[in-house]
Image (tube, rainbow, N blue to C red):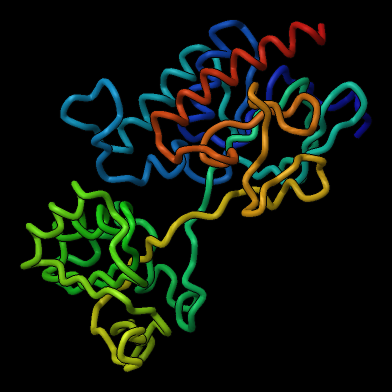
Amino acid sequence: MKNDEMPLHDVVIIGAGPAALAAAIYTTREEIETVLYEKGIVGGLAATTDWIDNYPGYMKGIEGLRLADELRGQAERFGAKIEFGEVKKLERDGDSLKLLVDESEVRARAVLIATGSNYRKLGVPGEEEYYARGVHYCATCDGAFYAGKRIIVVGGGNSGVQEAMFLTRFATHIDLLVRSELRASEVLQRKLEAMKDKITVHTNVTVEEIVATDNVVVGARVHDKLTGDERVVEADGVFVFIGLLPNTTFLEGSGVELDEVGLVKSDANLHTSLSGVFVAGDVRSHATMQIASAVGDGATVALKIREYLEKQA
């Protein structure tokens, strides 16, 4: 397709998490035509979080899915268009930016990268084989399948502890496997201590293999870093919460500069190294990985995009 035949949008936002939706609220309110492309879940990881207790304005907290729905509804009310599709390539093409979305090409005057991150994997035998059949990365999505059963949770940070506590709604007992020591906040560690009758914490252990019998997950083989011993921790399912990886592989060769872990670098205006391309949210280098700050990024970057478009007019 020739350039003059491709759709030309004012702004294309890659992703539809909190940062993207907040940016869309601001751009569309100022009548800047905006389309968002999302390859997964609208709301991003926030939509799969059971309960959000630290988002300003919700004194009693709010369900992650509800917050995502409200952000989506507000953006659509002002005219944002949300499409499902995967952006596979981004490049500058003359006076505009060209994106390959699935198998179609679109153009934009400005682009916002707000792709967030994905779940980090253990990389051990059995993990891929038993994905969604005993190995999971979303407690909200899959926890109910384990009512009355025993669960392993891997991870000692805030997300690991939070999800372990959430899963006590379903499981009879949870074994929390921590690679070194607990890294969760003091508040969460106090709550965890109060639930020690349902959650057993194992520190300084690494998962070596997801163990299955007759194609059914029965636990995980772990290595004790202090004693050198190995043993199998029995469980009906394994939930993994060991961090996130940025969704930036599609930027290879684009001219957008990444940091050493693959997050997008930007200047003080959230402008990347590629003219007309901005970044916001958890995929931005030095982001604080909080929903509130992601939304703040979205509002800020929308104003910077408006300024950029005005200069290009």
